Length: 431
Image (cartoon, rainbow, N blue to C red; front, side, top):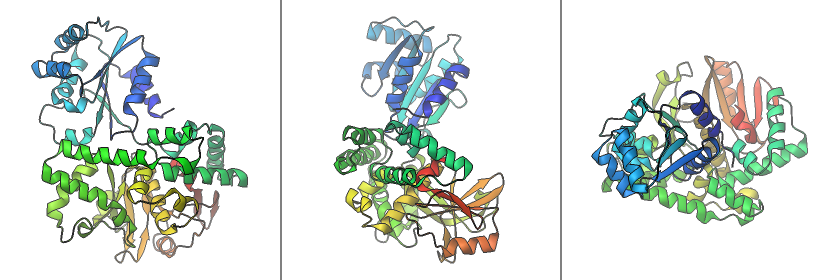
């Protein structure tokens, strides 16, 4: 399936190929798939090495981080000749070896034109707790997120519909109603599936029948995440990580979605769980959205101690919350459908490298879901799961702060009225 990260890989090949390329992210986002595809398509030869399985090659890095000795050792162990002029080397699961990561600095500085790409799961956490010398400034690092709705539409062969969505967004004109309804239907399907490539492939293989998708796929991913927590942390921290992660559906299901340690465990205290919370945030398994009292630029200067926590993928959240596909497509659970819509928009903004902020006043009496900085103007974003767009909070915010304009994301068609830009949920990725 087509991924937007591929264009960044092409740019790396054109401009920065001397610097090893590291693609990081949580499991099952498709890091290995996209890097293998890139290596196969763009280079005459490539060597694939999974360091989690190749203990002998992993041991090479423990003995030396000299690039020439490492390459010679790989040639001898694999009984191959590596022509560095036309060969790219792909180190997968590189997070299992800090020494391998440290060696990337020397591959970059070598007079030889080595071409190195690597992938790592939960590497953000390993970087934060790195004991060896991390090659700052000597590698290109990119993060691979779950597939967004744009990639989802391309992946299921709906590029023409995507073009119509983009036209309506650019012109701020309503889509033709049949197209609008089709796009909404596919958004609801995406809400059920999420952005994990393996789940989207299952949907395609089931002839895009949402009633036939296998929830066990996303459940297995969640189980793997929890297993990774055990692999990379001490026992007590792993237990706390699990409790925080599993508390997210309940945290978001409250009327006031502010994160509360008491929802993780009865009588839990911040000092006991702060480290685990930061671990999960660093790994991007969860997304932190800070509360802002005064909506001014820079937003970071006006945050308070309150925050919300979202999950990294809407499909994982639905399965973790044990919401059935039928509840989504028949509107039987509109309250939590709103939670899923809000989580979806958080993912979209985060994948565009925007820090997440929301505004609240009076302990949640008034609350605007998200704030973004557009050329110095703070723009409020309200998210609705339906076409019922009445909101006292946004109206109060507009009256009090008079933003340049506001954005409302809902099931309503494109439009602009009362200085509020209406954007359908299926077009949130275009903001």
